[in-house]
Length: 446
Image: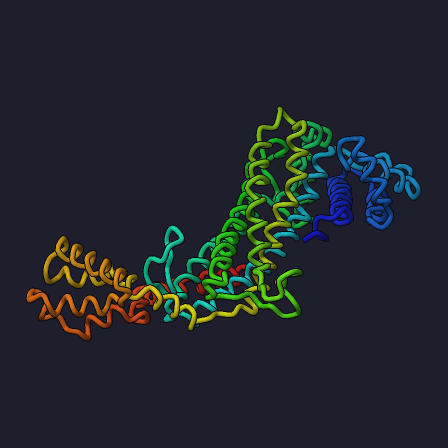
């Protein structure tokens, strides 16, 4: 991802824009064909002093100004007449925005590849653990028993939606920028729209309905979808970190080669993938907010806000990609301790089945009475350090109104595997749909 946005990649993308501009203008009869050849020959990044361009770009306020100047000098060495039409009819923002679109296309492919891999990891793991009981926790406290597969489906679904959203947003946002000085293509006259169509086709971009110099909605929406993806990854990272705590011990990241070790405490097994993911998700809202804040761009070219957007843009992709890579490393070797999951459930002495018990008793004595009875049972279980199942058996045996209840049916309420039935059914249906959604996305890509 760093390579996708580095200076060389961006400058080559700018040169690709210049070569496509000249070729399209020649095809429309606006430039001599010999000029196109000279310009195309000079549009190679290895012919440019990148550090010098970057330094000059700071002074001019945009990298495009020194780039075009140096490109003109190089073209002049081969074709003096061709040098007079370099960048003709275009403006600095045209080349800068279009180049950012081109490198972003590469960045999106990197994101999609990592995202597809992570989705595959979660899908396979979730389907393998449909019937694995695990504690569901609300407000950071034990709540009820759910299925680990159901939990994984909750992690996976936003990622599948993210893939679809990024595809849709990219279809709108990956478009050519060509408007000339103030967006009217005035220099090229009536041939301007045709030049834009030819350029967009040559560069593999969408032809815009008009220049979008200060209309940034489609572009910013793409950036916000990347931010949303990173937020969803942060949710996974948070849950992973909590389940990997030593006191919980239900999950563990791979530790091969000293991964996750501590310089001072040899016993530690730090969840570094969760750490990286949470760091990325924590930083992302500020970068996304900058994109939104920069949308109020003045008149026909923004002063400062467009430049702020350009500076923030790569960071969004770097954060998302870093989080994806980190989670893929974790899930490629994730240790799932199903025994520890069961121990954590059993340690609560059946209290997590209190709601199910109350519902079953309500059929015999009504909801208010059942709720009061189970509340009393849970107080007894906690005070006497007994399993709620045993307390319930004793209470039911002593109550004539409940004597008809089947003891075996009562025991089933406290069976963790049986308690996953609803979660298992819903997760199975959800995985079937998510698998189909992923297949459809892959078919569109191919």
